[in-house]
Amino acid sequence: MIRSFIYKFTIFSCLCCLSSSQTSKPLDDKISGSLSLLIAKPQGDFSNHVTNNGYGIDIDGGYRFGNSPFAIGLNLAFATYGKLERKIPFNYFSDLVKLTETTESKIMMLDPYLKASLHLSTNVSIYVKGFGGYQYLNTSTTLKNDEQVEGDRSDNNDKPYIAKSDVFKDGTFNYGYGIGMRFPIPFMGGEGKKPVINIECKWSTGGEAQYLNAGKDGAIIFSDPADGPVTTTYYPEQSKTDLFNISIGVGI
View 1 (cartoon, rainbow, N blue to C red):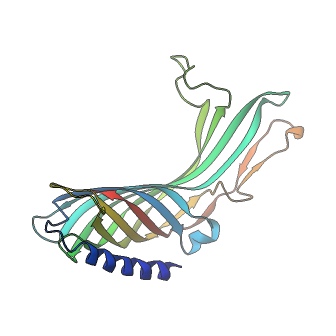
View 2: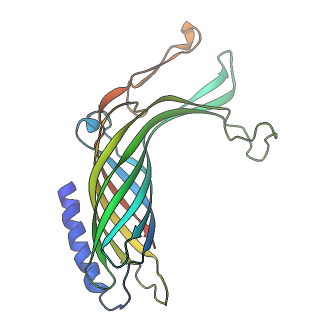
View 3: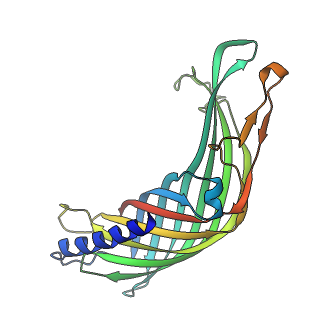
């Protein structure tokens, strides 16, 4: 699947290069940035415990050194890879008031990087980057009242939930490399700096960490209400946290 994506990515790059060769202004200025949709696919041991993809956003900002092809930057990404939602009564003696309990497992990545770009034409560039940073894995639970009205909150309770808490968290260092392409959005002419489409693939090697996958069967077990007050038992996993990330978005 990944090989097929890279093959299609290469063909797409060549087509964009040919279609954009008529413009005369270079694509990259000294400052660049992008906001993208992110797909995070677990790899290696991580994929044995997290079988689904994570989805989120990717925020990127960079600075190019003069007229050189080299730039430094910072990448911040968030993805949700597990979710469990259930309806529970306000108390177990009456089900007149229902609450929604949502448990989500997320990963955050903060990675400084060094990037080298190559212009295929005056308006299309491809690049490679090397990065190293930190990733934080967190599972939190939020409790909401389904009947709570957004505009009907007191000054002392302006939060959109009743309670929120972290149930499991850990972090580890990561490093890796990526390839990407930037090309102008079709049919957007005019003078000045124009928005671009940014496509990027990254391979990240993550260190070992403990984490909880809220969407995995058996990771969170609730006791039977008939046996007394409900208790929650968590079964975390531990492994390396390698990822293959694909991001597609808009930048400057």
